[in-house]
Image (tube, rainbow, N blue to C red; front, side, top):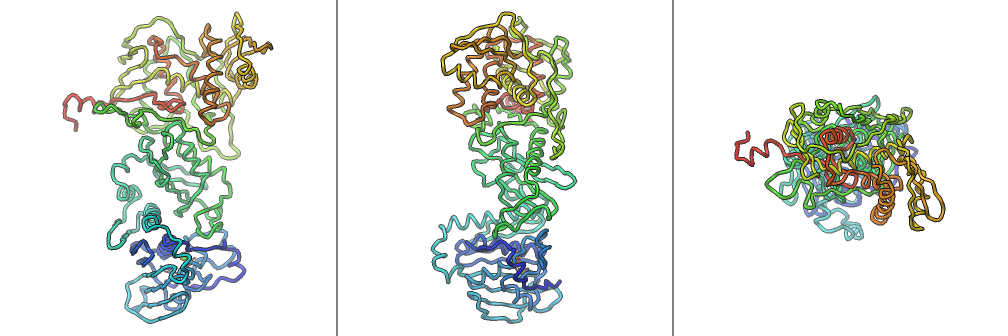
Length: 623
Ligand code: ADP
Ligand code: MG
């Protein structure tokens, strides 16, 4: 197939984001790989010496170039990929600027061998610093081999500017890896100073990831796919407990082009809110497929940045898709009895992510059922099993991808008192409906599930329930208040009084009914449905104290802080004895929340001991 390269008119050339293409060896490798893939290669080799400063060789089995094209290819603005300004509006190839080969040839000694399948002979071209040294027919494999020697030999400033050999090689490896991840059907060979770093056979997407990152890492990934009429997102996301210490293993692509995009990265990060240890990052490989006319790649010469027609819709789409995938999987940490540490790390504790925009939007939380003595045990356990069982299932009330026009207000909560009746005397072991449930040390709730034993920390479980309710209350402003028969008066310090005054609109949304009496006195006339009557003054004081503590340590907005402070202080405590109904209501409500696995401060709520683990422990052979 002929490439028929032409020189872009000055008019179009001027519309192309100007700037340097080749800043370092890795950028040359990236451009050469893009050319090979644009040429339809199914097999690629990248061979570098001295991290690319002595030589870079990229060999492909793509469609090659005619002798005339081979020469033209090194001219500036010479490309076969676009011809009109309109083409620039919808770029379908990795390259389009017609500058890479010219730029590389200007600062190095380049040799190119290329042959198209219809020709018996290929052509050899040697160029040094943009000067043609040789063009001759030559025997060559089908495809193209470009060798770049002594990069920046004629620009010593540039050459001296290069980082250490290790850094440059790492950058090259990164470029090769990013390409290999998203072109799994292409074979990649990558050699550095005679050492073979990668030898990847064509595979499906998952197989390629397993080859690149190992089977263990691959097994920790959750497949993701979500489609709308104009957008598809597909790939894999890491289980939170396999988080990485850096962003290096975050692979984001638009139409199989590796890009950097803070907003979409943040969308993914946001979806993992409360699930990650502080300073950890989720592993992910995500490719967005959309009409090339809806994304502008011509923003920066490196083509790493893109602009979307509708950035906020993209953000919401990514957030939704990742959240949904996480919600569909069992993220309960399985404890191994053999070690003291849980899979959550040495502290056994996750941190709340206090980063930017850490506020959740919980408009789509399935509403909790109002508890009652006649609770349907079977239903509670089915709900638990649905979310914890091994099968991948959709959770109740699954939200659909919100579009710009389709921002539905959250469903208001039922106007019922939804609180756990605390303090009633209860039995500690109950067997109902064939499902025993225990309270251990007035702290933990134990129950059998299909795959093993479930252990719930009652305080953090209730904290999660109250937190999600509080956030929902902030958003749909329908608090449930219990009016007090005997209003309580509380004397605050001057600064707490000011704080309470500032927070009153928010406190009211939580369900407090407060009157400011001056002289630092507040009268509590009503309290949220979840607060125990009799403890109202204590809880208000505790919430204010906690709010201040959080202000010092975390950067979060006032509402989120208040929701957390309230949840923490109003929740049942370790030591509170629960009866069977209370335990069941708690578990029922917990598994109706968006994130039943981690409390708002990042502590685990639920752990599971699998039957396999017990079998191992008791010396039974596990298949
Ligand atoms: P661009 O990729 O932006 O078009 P380049 O300077 O990278 O610009 O390449 C110029 C042209 O040379 C390409 O448009 C393509 O036609 C041809 N070309 C470059 N590399 C290859 C290759 N490996 N196989 C086939 N054709 C190639
Ligand atoms: Mg190119």
